[in-house]
Amino acid sequence: METANITITAADQGEQLSIAGGNYRFLITGEETENRFAVIEMIVPPGAGPAPHEHPDIQETFYVAEGEVEFRTEASKQVATRGAFINIPLNGGVHAFKNISDAPACLVCTVTPAGLERLFREISGLSPQDVRAVAAKYIQKLYPPDYLD
Image (cartoon, rainbow, N blue to C red; front, side, top):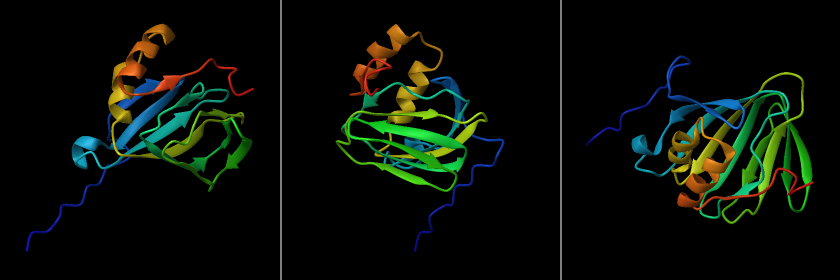
């Protein structure tokens, strides 16, 4: 009988990128999970977060480890604080989040299937205009920052 290997990513390990004003660290990637899922730690500074976007083929969940984050959709606006869990289902529509506190927020994001981390690698450090072109390649649709206001 073959035994599966356990993967441990230490606090000082994992690829780190600058995305949407924050620092994202890959805890496990699709390359390590046969593309079943990926887990990303997101350190989001006060006032930062991604603009409204949608990705119909990816389910995304967030666990708020620290901070206070406002999640917005076309239907609602809700505040999630430490210990909260957020689920964006497949075909979850347009959504965005923003750190509304005065301290960095820490989110643990799981995406199923994996793939969002590949997008993040390509857009890290790009201008907003260049991000649009790359996002379309990954079936991501981006909206203006005020789209959900």
